[in-house]
Image 1: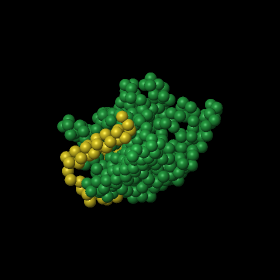
Image 2 (image 1 turned 90 degrees about the vertical axis):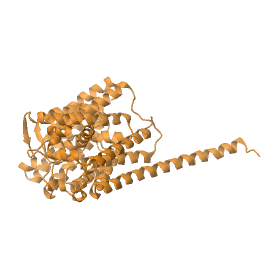
Image 3 (image 1 turned 45 degrees about the vertical axis):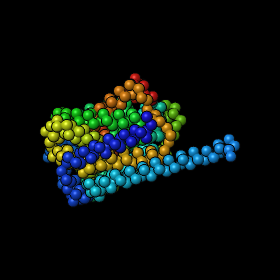
Image 4 (image 1 turned 180 degrees about the vertical axis):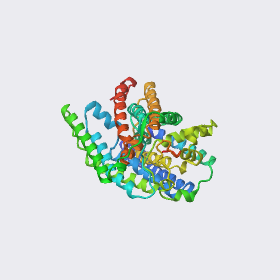
Amino acid sequence: MSRYLHLAVLAIVILAFVAVDHARSPEPDHAALEEWRSAGAAGACAPCGAICDGGGGN
Amino acid sequence: MTAPDGALQGAAAPSAAGSAAEGRALARTAAVAALVSFALAVAWFASLRNALLFLIGAGLGTSLVLFGIGFAGPWRAFKVRREARGFVATLLLLALATVVFIPALEAIDGVVSNAAPFGVSVLAGAFLFGIGMQLGGGCGSGTIVGAGTGSRHSLWVLLFFLPGSVVGTLHLPMWLGAPNMGQVVLADHLPVPVAALLQVAALAALAFAAVSIAKRSGSTASWRPTNRQVAGCAVIVLLALLSLYVSGRMWSITFAYGLWGAKVLDMAGTGISETVFWSSPYPANALANSVLADVTSVMNFGMLAGVAALTVWRWRKTDDLAPGSARGFAAAALAGLLMGYGARLAFGCNIGALFSGLASGSMHAWLWFAAAWAGSHLGVRLRPRFGLAN
């Protein structure tokens, strides 16, 4: 199978996953998502996977 | 009236060439259109900010390809053939990130660093990750780049990254109970310029040691990064800085793999959202909301889309280079599982833990570096057993 066919399959899988996930999720807070550096402003940890003292995802 | 054979052939050749050129133009147009369409969809369904982060991700992915910057390959080249150039280029990337980010994290309001605990979980996780990055032929970023070029091997690695990451998130609370010193950040103990210079000096010493070892081994290959690689380091650091300025977070990759895997399990109604990791505020929020709202996911999609668009743009009539053997598949599956699990224990991959960790001045990144280097050594030795060339 050529690499281009692999890419087509990958694109279909990703698009299907995103569509299904987005459809079953609550409507995003668009205004909040437009805010730059909101993660830091909210005091959230960086998303590398740890669980911080305050319970957030580091 | 019948045309002579020669005339027919002469007419067919330009026609075939024209058809190929049209096909290439069509493919290129489709690739760019797909990239732009995805960005517009992110803007529509999430926000313009996330669409910008998608494009920054596309820039980072294409930069890694165009400028020849990587981790797994250069590490293996040094270990096997004592070729230092690629490894020195990655050290240059880390040094540049140090000089830019340690002051930037102090200067820019509303940003968070990638500091993480220095302890056993990093040691174990990065060692496993190091094995996986050699079997997979790419690390966190390398797997995305490989998948974006249509490599079958990388696509399998990417697929198995998800279950590995999910299991890692389930075990992480247990690993966090293992001995650790907490977060140790240079800039918390030293003035910012001193912290940055100290780290750059350590990276320079490492580069000097690598070049010395290469020369002693008789390697005649140049250790100097090419101008293209130097430019690439600068572009990648600038794009990563832009992502920090926009999102407030350091560049990371592998959190999204765990999130995607957890979302699939959540769709299947497994109750993953009730587990310790996925019920803590940040992961719970990411799990409950659209994947297009998650910064790491959106940037990963951008990287994939950018590299895929570049691959189509180049339009080379070559089949997948990776072997399609059962052993090759086993290597890819094991690589994905090891890297997925290891990245969660070690607080990230070569980007989230090493690049962004060092750029944050966090000592866990140095431990990650050492442990992944050791694991990589084992991974290189294991590659021939899976039919992978060194």
